[in-house]
Every structure is written in C-alpha cells, then in structure tokens.
Image (cartoon, rainbow, N blue to C red; front, side, top):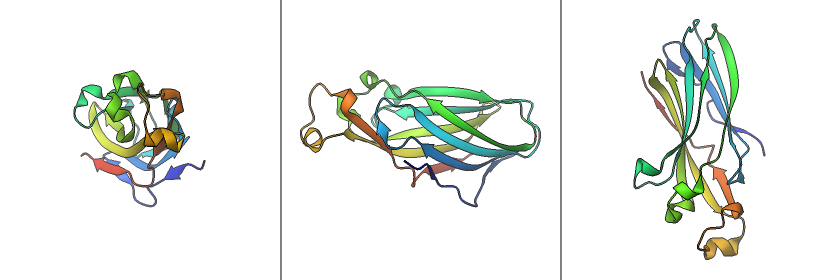
Length: 163
C-alpha cells in the first residue's frame, strides 16, 4: 500500500519546529502489525534538547483508562535543518481494550513534545474489523484477535497545534 500524506504546503509551527509532513505507512494492516508513521519536520534553529514523539491508542471512547501509550521516542539534540524519521510502535494489547470497543472506529494520537510541552497532536480515526464479512456480521465471542484488520483513515487527520 502507498503511504498517505496530508500536510501539503502548509506547515505546523511551534517556535523552532515545523512539522511539514506526516505519512501513514503500513496501512491497512493486520491488527498485530506495528504502527509506522514517517514524520518530516524542520528545526529552524539548533535545539539542545530532545523532541519527544508519543503514540497513544484510544481503547475506549467512554474512558481514558483504556488508552495505551504504544511508544515514545526522543530525537535530538538537533541542528537547524530538515529531518525525516520513521516512528514505529507496537500494536495495542487487545486484552486491555473492552471487547465491545475492539471492533469499529477508534482513534490513534501522534503527539510531539518539546521541553515537556505538547506542540502538536495529530489524531487519526482507526477502523478495526474482521477480515471476513461473516465475522463482521456476527462477531465471535471471545474475539478472534488474529483475524482483525486495522485501517487508519489517513486522509482525514485532526490536527491540533499548541503554542
């Protein structure tokens, strides 16, 4: 599958960091496949401190107690330049997701932090379904995790900028 980008000519800025593009890789994929995001950004001045990237999987719309931090990475220190990283994270643990929330639409959040302040949050809708129509029509109990397919709706991210 082809990576999907959304930024185009617009940039997201927080002081010295411009996120210029995010591409969702490995999409669609099996539920147990790693998440992969290619993040392109510019540092407008040297940064002596790290940029932190986090990936959060929202396990249930009813409560954040089912949210899972899939990974967190530190990038830096950095010179004034353009950068591209591939952020890869493990899939969520399906046993920590309420079974009634396992199928259907949820959210994945990619967040950037500098000096412990969030400067960008990019949210994507994620649709989880079975790989066979008959399983989607009559979902088995207990769920068959190895038959789940994940599709990230990469074309329609929700971007929040923080100053």
